[in-house]
Image (cartoon, rainbow, N blue to C red; front, top):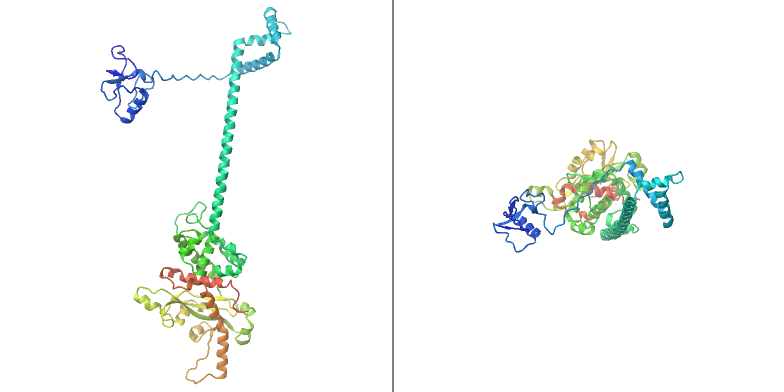
Length: 497
């Protein structure tokens, strides 16, 4: 039977325990490292290790490893700490004072002083020195002195370590400041690559081109009206962020999102183009647009109202005062081309006989001063003007005595009469050969004043979101887009001076 690391055997030490090497490869590798003996056969069943090599003289578990070998150093026992009493502290203080006093005296004086204290009796002049001499012997003083030197060395060592840590801390601060500057430079580069409308604040033509507003101040004024309420926009996420906003933390600021929506409406840019301009994904652009458009409609739609008669009279142009002083609103319907639905019944409903294609129709109204005061939802292209007038809620906005100026196709006298309003339209030729002089003059007046609503429609269609066919995918928010565009058109210069 072979033993590992020593010459003990059952013959010369029968009182010891002998253990086999565990078969676990992981534990066996640890035995190989600890044994430092490559000649022994660990796989042999006769190989044993005695209990002398285990801490405590016994193997306690399968994973208990031997730790006692000739090359291992015994662990030093920690000195026992004792609590110092008040008297011990006083003795140490007295020893320090005596050491200081002895260091200041010459060596010969110390020798004479000690010789006299041994031969002479204690008297009043030397009683204190003799008492201090008898309290601490020479060995105790040497031990105390060595102890103090050791502490001074430890203090010097600790000071060196503190200085090293301070240097390392300074190096870490320098690296941190460099990284912070790098992060700021990257953020600055990212912001410079991202589209920023504020770069054109001094260029009114560029502001009008990108946003449809006459200048940067008008653009900021519009944003300020919705800035506070925009914190409650729902982007479709169910969970909330740490600051209470709905959805995940946004990549773009609210102002950048508002600018993105304005570019989408004004220039009709595709979502991929906006994603590249603002350095976001296409899905993010889609979510921003789908969240902001209904929100802007809720904010701006209450501003589209027919003013009271006193306000209308105050801002009524001279041309209306002379020719049609009682007109309250000028109305007309406009159509926007849309994609052809796949269902045949939907195609029939959306087909416009006037445009000869599938469209969506809306009723618009402006005041005599040229301010948009009514916009309806979008209806299928086959819906007549009379049906839109009733279904859009336009009659509820009128008061008894109001006059509505419209084109010939707006034949809604009976519907307007039901709310006490009247209709002003051009005269019909009917069965006559030609118009009379009064009828001709009347038609010229109506045409010259009604043309302003056509100018409004042109201004609205200059928002290039309506240049292309309205996709079926955005049909649910197409009415919201129209209302927002009509509301934003009121920020532009008036149609009638």
